[in-house]
Amino acid sequence: MCLITFAWQCHKEYPLVVLANRDEFYKRPTQPADYWEDHPHILAGRDLEAGGTWMGVSSRGRWAALTNYRDPQSILTNAPSRGELTSNFLSSDLSIKEYLSSIKHSGKVYNGFNLLVGDAKELGYYNNIDHEILSVQPGVHGLSNGLLNTAWPKVENARHKLEQSLKADQLYMDGLAHQMLDQQLADDDELPSTGVPYEWEKALSAMFISSPEYGTSITTVLRLNNAGIIDFTEHTHAVNGKEAVKKNHQLTF
Image (tube, rainbow, N blue to C red):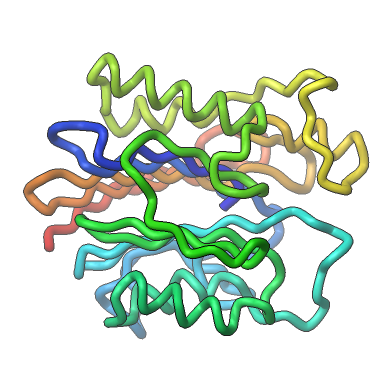
């Protein structure tokens, strides 16, 4: 995942609403969101190159999402896949605090990451940059390839759109997904400085990224209601940015 915005404990009916875009090289093999044969209680897309996932839920009421921390000067060439951090939580029986504590001890072997893990009652966050485990407080939050709530233009744009939907009480799944298709680029004076060339910094500044070889390949919407029902919709995009496939799932726990 490269852009996530979420509302936690902000709505009377839906305590959790998550909107996320996965940005990736189009050629990387990916399995669309479905139940996993080796872990039938996990519903998630799957990276067929490394085996993990960027975002998923479980029939036990758990969810997890991950973004990479962009720092090209600090890449570890033989690091394990960060996608296992999400899938391991979804398959684990550890509490949120127990799981994040275990990751804190081993997190240095991975390239930079941000990890969100939660259930209907609690939401935790950890990154291996400042190594602080946080209990996420109620509110509308945003996360890209910096740290949680780093005010990049795309993060602030996504947060604002979700805040407006909450204010208008318009939390329809398709409408929420549509918000994540914004291709507006940030002005040059608002671009973050993450160590990539200007052309990439500019292209990556949009909520929805479109380029010949790399871009937003998947948009996911997760909505949890007070009755313990999770709506999970995945939109898979073609290379030109047009929607190719939409899959709706619903879990009760």
